Amino acid sequence: MKIDPATFWIVLPALAIGTYLIRLSFLGVLGNQPLPAGLRRALRYTAVAILPGLVAPAVLWPAATGGETDPARLAAACVTLGVGIVTRSVIGAILAGGVTLYAVLWL
Amino acid sequence: MTPIRSAFLRGCLASAPFVIVVIPFALLFGVVATEAGLNLLQVMLFSFSVFAGASQFAAVQLMQDQAPVLVVLATSLAVNLRMVMYSVAMAPHLGAAPFGTRALMAYFLVDQSFAASQIEFERRPDQPLADKVAFFFGTVTPIAPMWFAATFAGALVGEAIPPEYALDFAVPITFLAICAPMLRSIPHVVAAAVSIVAALVLAGLPYGTGLLLAAVLAMAAGAGAEVALTRKGVTHED
Image (cartoon, rainbow over all chains, first blue to last red; front, top):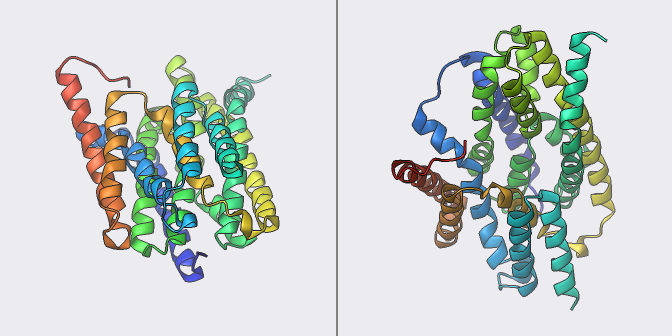
């Protein structure tokens, strides 16, 4: 589905300003204050807590196949994850996943 | 050569390898955002004003899924919360610079400039403020122009790709690729596993709120696992 322009024009400035304020927080305003240990601990896991959950439904129930589990997409996801864990290379993992996706789709 | 200039050049050199990661990532964003129905101006404004790849992909995906504005914002901003840590880490080194300089550095505080500067400032903590500032701006010099230029190129390519070649799976692959190298400790693996399971179980909740709830659970699980391991005497890595 295409992005609704009204949604876009609300999200863009809010996301831009919010992201900037996150970056400015301590460097610009709060200075050399120590971050509470609990907060520091939680922040360490933000990215890894959101991104896998964001893609999990798309991996198992892709909209492109009407929600039915697709071997090509599942295989591509597993290969991407595996190559990424082993090589620690983001680009290597993307390439391996892309090649797997198109190889299995084409078979 | 003045010391400042060499600090600037050292910064450029330190972040030069990241260009290899930034270019395909920005290209892909341009393509995916264009396929999602954004025009060239919208795509470029996105990369200029937000300037944070993972959250840009997340926002595009959620807007495409017709998630409500608040859910889109909460999820995408949560992806960027890690930058609070970057801001905390840079403050002792760059905090004495004039506010205008710090305000500009904040805009350029991205994964790559943080990573390169953090290593440099830990290695040479006693260098003058001017050198640290020059180094920091050096680290963004190869990165930022490439981010914008490759987004632009991707948007042009995206307009040329017919919709039959739906790139629906480019975003999941990209996110998995970003996450995989992060799975470097048991708490990170625990957080990722909880995130996946909870997101699938809660997928039926309305307005994408299942993902937000899953993220909170996953964060708590990661932090909890870290506390448990520290108590058992297994220290974490950073």
